[in-house]
Length: 208
Image (cartoon, rainbow, N blue to C red; front, top):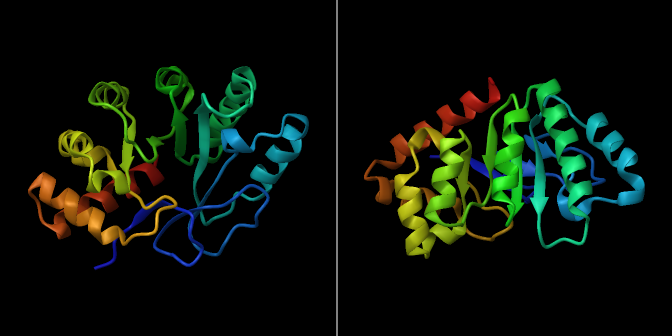
């Protein structure tokens, strides 16, 4: 059985969504494209958006990573401007948003009302309260390797509805089947059933 990797950084993994780095050309396999908060070049924002918009093709499944990050040195107002423009692009091209967020979840939630497409928080590893607030606001949560060893995160994954769930390797080097096995155990369902739900979620976000 093949297991879909919702968000990864490995060119040689065709069954999933490859996040292309800023300035790169899109691959022939499914990918996401966006301007990550850490990659924002304050003096070259228009050139960055030109790159983004000119590289959205049929294999592009999502816009992102994009979002807000309290740690990177780019000013918050600039991050918000770049994030807002990517939400508009997502609406125009009818593709979901993959969100990178560090300590700015409630700001991201406030931006959600501008989004017409599905919005997915990638690599979710925060507290139950944040998960509940995101789910209440119709976000999807994508979980990564941390679920394999964080008990509190396992509880959150167990309580996340199957129709709001994705799984990913991100930039970690491990077999995603381990993650599917752990989630199927936590949920008390078969690997086949879990796989089916995730592919249904993928169809849902792709079809708006």
